[in-house]
Image (cartoon, rainbow, N blue to C red; front, side, top):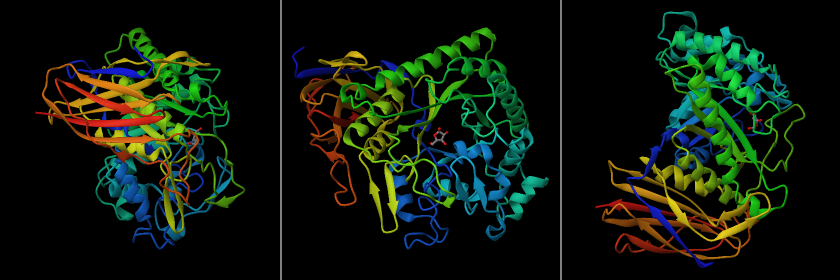
Length: 499
Ligand code: AHR
């Protein structure tokens, strides 16, 4: 293989698994300006009659979030959901001990459900396992999902929502392994509390799916023992194990950073093994999958705790081209591990650690907004096991890695497919053959490319379109092969349609 050529082999028969639509989810926490001034800002001239920012709603719809996790995060572990329902003028102002901010409770469970409906996203609620009891967790399921006729369901009706919400996905706590968590527990304590909470929650509504807290990240001293222990205790009562991970290039080592997919795969593979081990040990017929319900680039370049103010500017990150290419790889990994990963939620959707930033008069879409939008719009059907021949890049952290990071999808029902290609080389353009080996007659229906010469290039309020996804000329397919130019530092998407 020459330094400047590559080959990508795609075969619709070589499948990995059905791509869960829930891989393209988001996370909204009561933190900084995510909820207030992000989603909900009734004083803004851009707000609709419900107080939702219409420009934010539009951008979120563009990104097609399939599922939305709420209300935290660390915030969750001190939150009493009853504070956030009922007449707004009677809701208490509280001190939030997770982020040292003032919580006004003007946005709560009912507003969140309304918000999910506005963006056509499935709600994924979380119950407090810190200061919260198993009773308060079960009560929230009753409030959301039970028909009227009992106390909490009637409370929902009294507040204007007669019909049950039928919330299907429920996180049982958040990062309970972390000493920073309000009400942190050790692994046995958490496993038992989560099991009992999940039991009561499912007795209220057997159709719900529950997510057990896994380790907060793979650097925790208790990883992966926490995951194994909590799973062994709660296995039959939970459906997913959560993974959280934030990354950044604080080491200033761009080649290694641009190979982050390797770390993401290791993390998933370790937990895939843990799930198989526990299932075998328990002689269980039940399956538990993974829910990567917090993932994002987080540089910690902005403050993360407030000073007892409302909606402080916390964790408002600037995202660069290299960050966008790491996000694209993350999404590729989601497709390549689609057999075990069934839910993923980017943390977070607006202002906090987000590619969307608001100010009173505008909305900024940062670099990594675009890879998410492209993959969530085009990855459908089954994930394909792609074979790649590409030159190797040397990295300090991972040794030699292929210059290309690729995933692909194919939806047999519609005949539509897509190929997602990151060229992680900082210097080398590649001429790549994409070879479809399954003998189908197909055309390339669309192509987009996000690229730049400076890995640190970003979009700013002054220059908001420095790095965006540009439409490219769809290459012709001859004898099942198309040839494509991949600039260095680029993400390319091709969509196809079989005849
Ligand atoms: O997303 C920000 C925070 O990161 C969440 O509150 C917490 O779960 C994680 O540590």
